[in-house]
Length: 344
Ligand code: 6XA
Ligand code: ZN
Image (cartoon, rainbow, N blue to C red):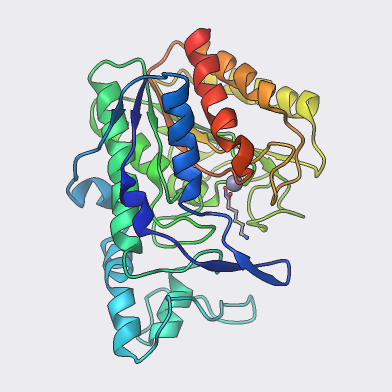
């Protein structure tokens, strides 16, 4: 299987984050992609390919132009306002405050408008790194469109929390959504996104919620206790034409393989019943038992099984890297899914 990767991911690195009351080194650090890349090479998964640069048009199929302008320009604006350090949002709208339907003019108010948390900052080169992650997903999609059975987009920063016009949860551009849209724009009629990351892909859900040409199935920590909170409940099934095409599997803290697998198998069957013509896997491996910010109990061998079962979909498939922070095992876990897939 071809892996799409660029060292340009180093252009994004938020130095720190606030985690459970402590300022710590961010979990979403450049080392993550390097560890996965090293494992890809170690097992001889296949060639590693640098993605070309794509036009903004491919990204505008998913994200709004005003949001993209904001992401591109906010760092310069921050500096122009006399601020040093990285761009961090300051506060968010509470339910007692009116919902704005247009971006406000002030810098901090606009940062609030275009984000939902402060998991990650915007640095001088975050925009470039996020664009290159989207390029990585697009190049992987194009490889599959040209006949590869499957490809791996080793994207960083990740994407599934980013919505049409917001960032959060370490995500700026929704790589998996951009890939799904590209399949649709190139002759595919129905695309499924299977999100096996430990966290709910709230951005992906927002993007496709009212559409029936993309089915989203997501297994994740129950939003009652887990980030991103508030979204990801089973009752959220899509709206309008999209009704029934959004499938959430919220699971309790401490979920182990058997319970996770039962939800996975249910989602697997529903994806099969949808009869997609292409499949995008939001490949987070933070359901791993030793993940420092997660509370599921999957073991490394289970990621092999996941890959084997994904291979049972007789479909063109793009794997898109999302989360996973147990750096010692991150390469093994992510590549286990791909090896399970290849060996099946
Ligand atoms: C913020 C936690 C962000 C989780 C990001 C993630 N403190 N999403 O892995 O899939
Ligand atoms: Zn995650």
